[in-house]
Length: 200
Ligand SMILES: [Zn+2]
Image (cartoon, rainbow, N blue to C red; front, side):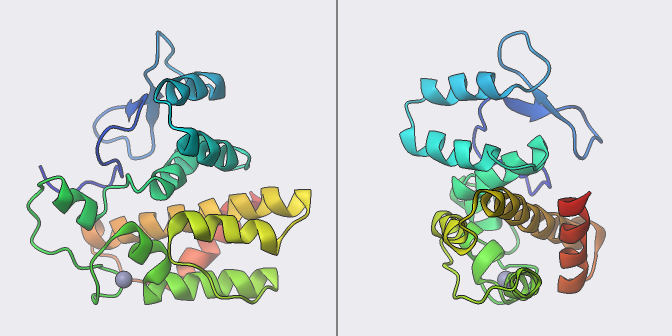
Protein backbone atom coordinates (compact mmCIF):
# COMPACT_ATOMS: atom_id res chain seq x y z
CA UNK A 1 0.00 0.00 0.00
CA UNK A 2 1.36 3.42 -0.92
CA UNK A 3 0.21 6.87 -1.81
CA UNK A 4 -2.94 7.34 -3.86
CA UNK A 5 -4.68 10.42 -5.15
CA UNK A 6 -8.05 9.29 -3.78
CA UNK A 7 -7.58 11.27 -0.61
CA UNK A 8 -9.11 9.03 2.01
CA UNK A 9 -7.23 7.76 4.98
CA UNK A 10 -8.99 5.41 7.33
CA UNK A 11 -12.67 4.89 6.84
CA UNK A 12 -14.66 7.58 5.14
CA UNK A 13 -18.16 6.46 5.98
CA UNK A 14 -20.45 5.64 3.12
CA UNK A 15 -18.13 6.34 0.21
CA UNK A 16 -16.04 4.26 -2.15
CA UNK A 17 -14.37 4.70 -5.49
CA UNK A 18 -16.55 4.12 -8.52
CA UNK A 19 -13.94 1.88 -10.08
CA UNK A 20 -10.34 1.65 -11.25
CA UNK A 21 -9.30 4.50 -13.47
CA UNK A 22 -12.16 6.77 -12.43
CA UNK A 23 -10.45 9.79 -10.95
CA UNK A 24 -13.51 11.69 -9.78
CA UNK A 25 -16.25 9.16 -9.42
CA UNK A 26 -17.69 8.41 -6.00
CA UNK A 27 -20.39 5.92 -5.20
CA UNK A 28 -22.54 6.30 -2.13
CA UNK A 29 -22.75 2.89 -0.47
CA UNK A 30 -25.28 3.37 2.31
CA UNK A 31 -28.25 1.02 2.09
CA UNK A 32 -29.20 0.08 -1.43
CA UNK A 33 -28.67 3.59 -2.80
CA UNK A 34 -26.05 4.08 -5.46
CA UNK A 35 -26.37 7.82 -5.42
CA UNK A 36 -25.51 10.28 -2.71
CA UNK A 37 -28.20 12.04 -0.69
CA UNK A 38 -27.62 14.54 2.09
CA UNK A 39 -30.14 12.81 4.35
CA UNK A 40 -28.35 9.46 4.10
CA UNK A 41 -25.06 11.15 4.96
CA UNK A 42 -26.62 12.83 7.97
CA UNK A 43 -28.02 9.54 9.24
CA UNK A 44 -24.66 7.86 8.93
CA UNK A 45 -22.81 10.59 10.81
CA UNK A 46 -25.46 10.80 13.51
CA UNK A 47 -24.95 7.07 14.03
CA UNK A 48 -21.35 7.81 14.91
CA UNK A 49 -22.47 10.29 17.58
CA UNK A 50 -19.91 12.82 16.48
CA UNK A 51 -21.52 16.17 17.18
CA UNK A 52 -18.51 18.11 15.97
CA UNK A 53 -18.36 16.18 12.73
CA UNK A 54 -22.04 16.80 12.15
CA UNK A 55 -21.59 20.53 12.67
CA UNK A 56 -18.64 20.69 10.30
CA UNK A 57 -20.45 18.57 7.78
CA UNK A 58 -23.51 20.84 7.81
CA UNK A 59 -21.30 23.89 7.22
CA UNK A 60 -19.50 22.22 4.34
CA UNK A 61 -22.73 21.16 2.74
CA UNK A 62 -24.12 24.70 2.86
CA UNK A 63 -22.05 25.53 -0.18
CA UNK A 64 -22.46 25.19 -3.89
CA UNK A 65 -19.50 22.85 -4.23
CA UNK A 66 -19.99 19.52 -5.97
CA UNK A 67 -20.19 16.52 -3.60
CA UNK A 68 -16.71 15.16 -4.38
CA UNK A 69 -14.96 18.44 -3.51
CA UNK A 70 -17.18 19.03 -0.47
CA UNK A 71 -16.29 15.57 0.76
CA UNK A 72 -12.59 16.29 0.29
CA UNK A 73 -12.92 19.54 2.27
CA UNK A 74 -14.70 17.66 5.02
CA UNK A 75 -11.80 15.19 5.17
CA UNK A 76 -9.39 18.11 5.54
CA UNK A 77 -11.41 19.51 8.44
CA UNK A 78 -11.57 16.06 10.04
CA UNK A 79 -7.86 15.41 9.34
CA UNK A 80 -8.80 12.25 7.46
CA UNK A 81 -7.11 13.05 4.19
CA UNK A 82 -4.36 10.74 2.93
CA UNK A 83 -1.54 13.22 3.43
CA UNK A 84 1.93 11.75 3.83
CA UNK A 85 1.88 12.37 7.59
CA UNK A 86 -1.51 10.66 7.98
CA UNK A 87 -0.43 7.72 5.82
CA UNK A 88 2.72 7.34 7.90
CA UNK A 89 0.68 7.33 11.11
CA UNK A 90 -1.31 4.48 9.63
CA UNK A 91 1.86 2.48 9.07
CA UNK A 92 2.31 3.15 5.35
CA UNK A 93 5.99 3.15 4.43
CA UNK A 94 6.86 6.19 2.32
CA UNK A 95 10.19 7.35 0.94
CA UNK A 96 9.56 10.83 2.27
CA UNK A 97 7.01 12.71 4.36
CA UNK A 98 8.11 16.00 2.86
CA UNK A 99 5.60 18.34 1.23
CA UNK A 100 6.03 18.27 -2.56
CA UNK A 101 4.78 21.83 -2.95
CA UNK A 102 7.53 23.49 -0.89
CA UNK A 103 9.95 20.65 -0.12
CA UNK A 104 10.59 22.05 3.34
CA UNK A 105 8.20 20.58 5.89
CA UNK A 106 6.24 17.41 6.51
CA UNK A 107 3.00 17.11 4.60
CA UNK A 108 0.26 17.30 7.21
CA UNK A 109 -3.21 18.70 6.51
CA UNK A 110 -2.50 21.95 8.32
CA UNK A 111 0.80 22.41 6.49
CA UNK A 112 -0.29 21.39 2.99
CA UNK A 113 -3.35 23.63 2.85
CA UNK A 114 -2.44 26.54 5.12
CA UNK A 115 1.13 26.58 6.47
CA UNK A 116 2.87 25.81 3.17
CA UNK A 117 4.40 28.77 1.35
CA UNK A 118 2.78 27.53 -1.88
CA UNK A 119 -0.68 27.36 -0.26
CA UNK A 120 -0.06 30.79 1.23
CA UNK A 121 0.51 32.23 -2.25
CA UNK A 122 -2.76 30.72 -3.48
CA UNK A 123 -4.68 32.08 -0.49
CA UNK A 124 -3.12 35.52 -0.94
CA UNK A 125 -4.36 35.61 -4.54
CA UNK A 126 -7.81 34.73 -3.21
CA UNK A 127 -7.72 37.42 -0.52
CA UNK A 128 -6.72 40.00 -3.11
CA UNK A 129 -9.53 38.84 -5.36
CA UNK A 130 -12.04 39.13 -2.49
CA UNK A 131 -10.58 42.42 -1.30
CA UNK A 132 -9.86 41.18 2.23
CA UNK A 133 -6.72 41.35 4.34
CA UNK A 134 -6.08 39.23 7.42
CA UNK A 135 -3.82 36.66 9.07
CA UNK A 136 -5.23 33.18 8.57
CA UNK A 137 -5.02 30.33 11.08
CA UNK A 138 -3.11 27.19 10.07
CA UNK A 139 -5.47 24.82 11.86
CA UNK A 140 -8.08 23.73 9.28
CA UNK A 141 -11.24 24.18 11.36
CA UNK A 142 -10.19 27.57 12.72
CA UNK A 143 -9.23 28.66 9.23
CA UNK A 144 -12.58 27.57 7.82
CA UNK A 145 -14.52 29.39 10.55
CA UNK A 146 -12.46 32.57 10.19
CA UNK A 147 -13.95 33.29 6.82
CA UNK A 148 -17.47 33.37 8.13
CA UNK A 149 -16.40 36.52 9.98
CA UNK A 150 -14.78 38.04 6.92
CA UNK A 151 -17.84 37.76 4.74
CA UNK A 152 -20.66 37.80 7.28
CA UNK A 153 -23.63 38.34 5.00
CA UNK A 154 -25.69 35.32 4.02
CA UNK A 155 -24.56 35.56 0.42
CA UNK A 156 -20.97 36.01 1.52
CA UNK A 157 -21.15 32.92 3.67
CA UNK A 158 -22.27 30.70 0.80
CA UNK A 159 -19.80 32.20 -1.61
CA UNK A 160 -16.92 31.92 0.79
CA UNK A 161 -17.71 28.32 1.68
CA UNK A 162 -17.57 27.50 -2.00
CA UNK A 163 -14.31 29.39 -2.51
CA UNK A 164 -12.70 27.80 0.56
CA UNK A 165 -13.65 24.33 -0.65
CA UNK A 166 -12.45 25.22 -4.16
CA UNK A 167 -9.02 26.31 -2.93
CA UNK A 168 -8.56 23.22 -0.79
CA UNK A 169 -9.62 20.85 -3.57
CA UNK A 170 -7.43 22.54 -6.18
CA UNK A 171 -4.37 22.49 -3.90
CA UNK A 172 -4.94 18.78 -3.37
CA UNK A 173 -5.42 18.20 -7.09
CA UNK A 174 -2.26 20.17 -7.85
CA UNK A 175 -0.31 18.21 -5.25
CA UNK A 176 -1.47 14.95 -6.88
CA UNK A 177 -0.48 16.18 -10.33
CA UNK A 178 3.02 16.93 -9.08
CA UNK A 179 3.40 13.55 -7.38
CA UNK A 180 1.81 11.29 -9.96
CA UNK A 181 2.26 13.22 -13.22
CA UNK A 182 5.44 15.15 -12.50
CA UNK A 183 3.67 18.48 -12.74
CA UNK A 184 5.16 21.84 -11.75
CA UNK A 185 3.90 23.87 -8.78
CA UNK A 186 2.11 26.97 -10.02
CA UNK A 187 0.05 29.01 -7.54
CA UNK A 188 -1.41 31.23 -10.26
CA UNK A 189 -2.70 28.19 -12.12
CA UNK A 190 -4.34 26.83 -8.96
CA UNK A 191 -6.00 30.16 -8.29
CA UNK A 192 -7.23 30.42 -11.90
CA UNK A 193 -8.83 26.99 -11.60
CA UNK A 194 -10.52 28.04 -8.36
CA UNK A 195 -12.03 31.06 -10.10
CA UNK A 196 -13.29 28.96 -12.98
CA UNK A 197 -14.91 26.39 -10.68
CA UNK A 198 -16.45 28.92 -8.33
CA UNK A 199 -18.18 30.83 -11.09
CA UNK A 200 -19.04 27.98 -13.45
ZN1 LIG B 1 4.74 22.76 1.79
